[in-house]
Image 1 (cartoon, helix red, strand yellow):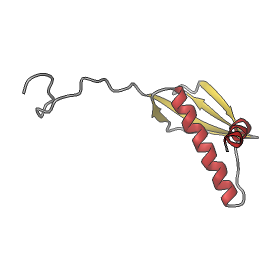
Image 2: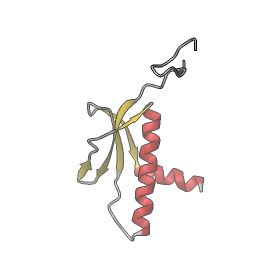
Image 3: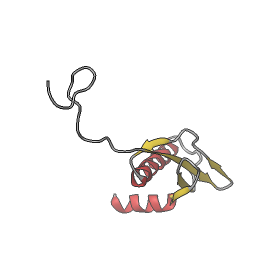
Image 4: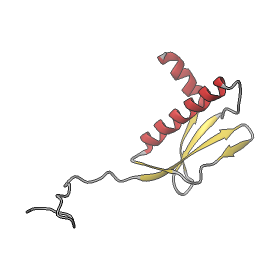
Length: 101
C-alpha cells in the first residue's frame, strides 16, 4: 500500500474531523436555574441552540402527555467556562412551532 496509511495499514481519510466544542444547555425556571454540568460536544453554537430547542419541545410534550410538570421559562446555552452564549425564550419556541404547524 502506498500513500497515507494508519498503523494497521488501512488508508486514513485525508478529510479533517470537525472541531467540537463543549456546550452546556441549562434551563431557567422562575426562581431557579437547572444547570447541566456534563455538557455536550457539538460543532458550533447553532447546533447547540438546535439541541436546546429540541430538548425543550420534548420536555413540553412530555408535560402535556402526563398532565403537568415544570416547564422552564428559558434555555441558556453556555460554554465550558459558564459564559452565556444564547438565551432562548420558551414562549418564542412555542410561538414559532405553532406557526409551523
